[in-house]
Image (cartoon, rainbow over all chains, first blue to last red; front, side):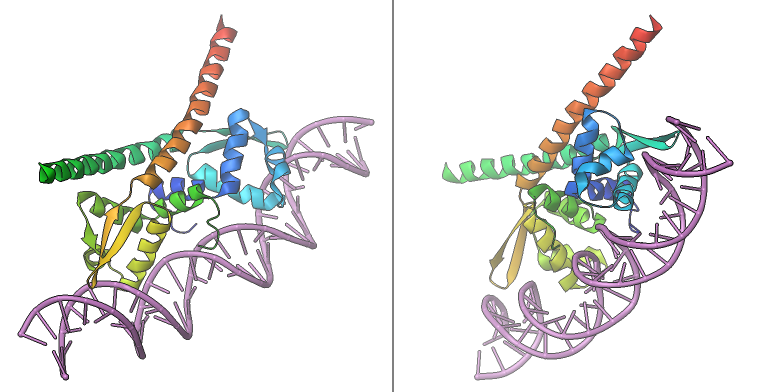
Length: 109
Length: 109
DNA sequence: CTCACACTTAAGCATATGCTTAAGTTATGT
DNA sequence: ACATAACTTAAGCATATGCTTAAGTGTGAG
C-alpha cells in the first residue's frame, strides 16, 4: 500500500481483490456496519477493516462513525475515474482494430 | 501473482501499476518489441518482461515471437471485461443515489 | 563459422502484503 | 456503575512481490 501514488493505482488495486469486490457488491444493496460487512467474509474483523481502508483510500467507499458502529456506504467517485480511463483506452483499441481491418481489406482488393 | 483466480483479479491487478499502464499506452500507438517497450522504463529487461507477463495473463496484451524479436500488441479482450464490470456496478450506484435524492426531496416536501 | 543481438531463465534478496492474535477504547443497555 | 458490544490499535509472522545480476538460448548478419 506504499505505492499508491496516482489515483488510478489506488482504484484498480482496490478492485483487484475478490473480497473487496464482494464488499462493494454488499454495499451496493445498501449501507452496512463493519461487522455486517465482515460477517460473510471468513476472516477476522481487523483484516476486513484493512480492506475497507483500501476501498476508502481509493474513493470507492465512505465511512462514518455513528455511536459505536462504523457505517459504510458506496462512493461513486472512484468508479467514474476508472471507467473513464478504460473508456479512453478502448477508443484507441477500437480505432486500431478498425484501421487494421481497413488495411486487410485494402490488401485484398 | 499466485492469487489470480478470477479474470477480474488479473485485469484490475494488471492495471493497478503505472508502469504497466504506460506500456499499454505505448502499445496503443502500435505494436512494439520487448526492447522498445523497455527502453523508456528505467528498469531491467527481465523486469519489463515480468510486467508484460502480467498484462498477457490478464488478456490485455498478446505477444508473438518473430525471429529473435518478441512483438507485443494490444488485446482488447481484457478491457471489455473490466469495463463491463464497472458499468454494471455503476448502475447500482446511480440507482442508489437517485433513490437517496428522491428520499431527500420527499422529506423536504 | 562466428559473433553480437534480443531476449530468456534462474537465483537471490529487500521490502511489502495479508493475514493473525491480543490488548486497548468507546458507547450502549440495565 | 458495570458488563457487553463494536470496533480499533499494535505487534508479529509467513508468504508474495518487484526488482536485481549473471548465466543461458536461439537468430540473423557478415
